[in-house]
Image 1 (cartoon, helix red, strand yellow):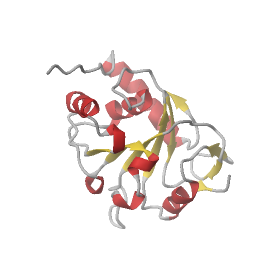
Image 2 (cartoon, helix red, strand yellow):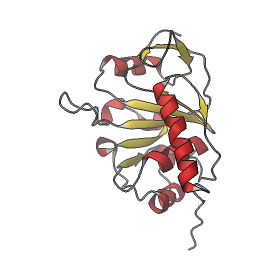
Image 3 (tube, one colour):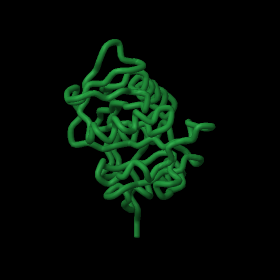
Image 4 (cartoon, one colour):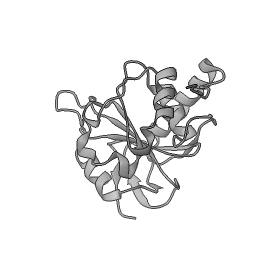
Length: 188
């Protein structure tokens, strides 16, 4: 059986640096939507999620693929491009999937009082990603921002646990927005 693997970055150093800068910009400014370069990646993974993985994950990054993202084509792509060990939710440093497939949030490492940084980052694949919906405030947001969220209530509960909790990267096609656990979430 022959396996067809799609390419990663065309110019790894420059493309990786560009994607890293965009991801950092999104994390530093919750609610800001950035556009990442298009990549040919196995479905159902979006180009934005692939950029995140190529930029932030490697052979030392435990990765959980949830739901339809746990498919042979994506597992092969991860093995070839990242070498990241595939794990269950309780051991994940990163997790990729749709909101419904990733749940519940309590299944992922949330950090501890001594090591709050030992928590997972969820890469949530969304059908739409827009600057409307829930009101965001907190570090990196001058006054307020708005972002479509999959479950504002669950994410507000996550933020209430700060400095513990999960960080989220929301992706849709080539678009990405970040929701660090320090971001306060208000009503829609």
